[in-house]
Image (tube, rainbow, N blue to C red; front, side):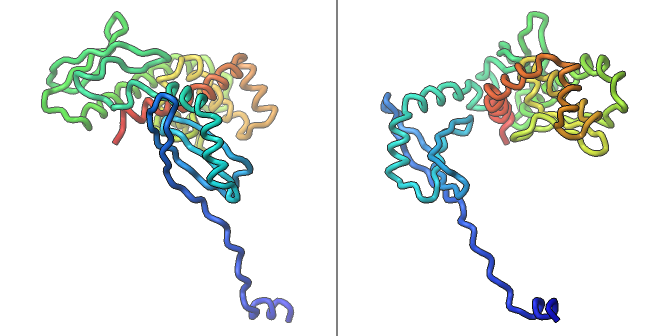
Length: 265
């Protein structure tokens, strides 16, 4: 009877969860330059927070924080804000442009880029380390972006091909396949069927950082979690993993932003 009563009783109304509120405000830096700041009222926020990434500046506020408190926080941190915006400003922000883009990021550095006419869209590394992008005159932005993505994936696969053999003999099985994707947060993941997914932006990072991510994901073939046993396996194979993790914390958003700017669309 008690369960029947529960079924027939009116359903209780679930409490309404406050929603995140977003708007954009204009803030003037000390040099007189106006910038847009995304202002977010977040139910989960416990304090006022200012952050900057490749997409711009973001001001996060608790729901009960006043507008004046947010504006005061911006003014108090305007020097830091200008410095961070300068760090995240990339020469590739305008995207890939024929005869205009003169350098491309690859393996932790910027490589000079030269353009030429060609029958097919193709990007190659020259003996001196510079890049040569050949493309038909009729090739549009989408074709150039496809050529650049193909080049980056080929370079990433070449790197993985050099590193992978020295780790495989210690693993219980080999990855079923390796795919490269553009991701917003993760650098790699291992599916239950042993398919390994890697962020294409890794080829823009310094090689040691790219190799660390590969080792990290391969160690998930031994332990699927991030337990102490897992980290011992990582440490055994890649003793400097902490330095590479710090590298991604410092430069990860920048790398992803570079790739997104070049392959936008």
